[in-house]
Length: 83
Image 1 (cartoon, rainbow, N blue to C red):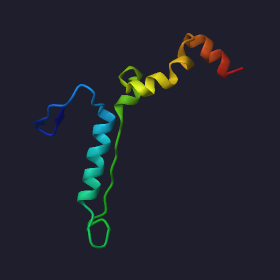
Image 2 (image 1 turned 90 degrees about the vertical axis):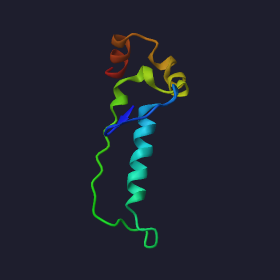
Image 3 (image 1 turned 90 degrees about the horizontal axis):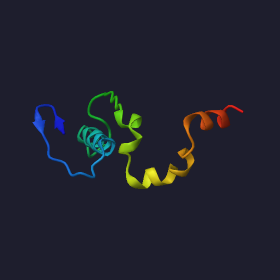
């Protein structure tokens, strides 16, 4: 995994969504004045999660939670939703 020009070694069970969230929180808290708890400067944070499109890369607990829901083929699910 890379951040700017630095390469970081990550564990096999790391999910990029979690890493992106943690880094965003670090960025936000680094810019907060600890005394007033206010941001030092105005900011915009745009956090785009690309992993939402890759359900097979979800944590095992998340996959297990929805596994039975998507056992049917796409057409069957679509037909149920739009009836």
